[in-house]
Length: 204
Image 1 (spheres, rainbow, N blue to C red):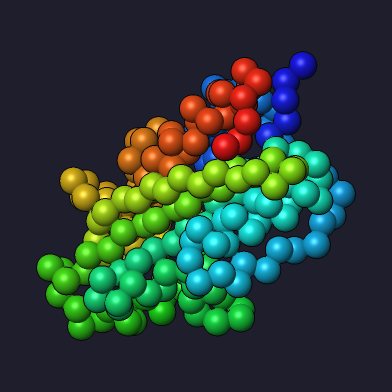
Image 2 (tube, rainbow, N blue to C red):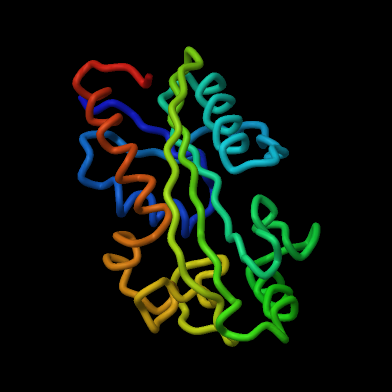
């Protein structure tokens, strides 16, 4: 019988991306949508790591399940690292992808290409119900385009051109994006830990 791995997310597009990358693991992958409603975990940390750990540990304790949570965002050099941990809420309380992208383009309106460097960062936390937790981090360097390109992905994907490419994250095939992305790199680092747990090991 496969062990359960709970992905602590209700974001359908993120869930699909995580499931695609983790599909070869010998775990039964479930998400928050497969469980009775749980209280929302307020992501009030000042770093990606703080938010990912809080979410993973809280949900693991609530459910009694091995839990994987991530916190990720976009760091733009010309904006001194913004939107950073506030990436999902960049445009305010009623934020959505469209509003966030519009605000980012406005903030970079007069910034030349050479100064539009940015990176996506993803921290993944893996927590057991007894409070053990391990974190890994992945990043992807790139730049912010002047217009949205592509319909795939989510968040700032239509504006982010990864280093070495001319297409945005939202234009790339999922198999390519998942190899070079911040989330893909972080998941590649956590996979050996998950494989060890499946063989009887522990989170830490």
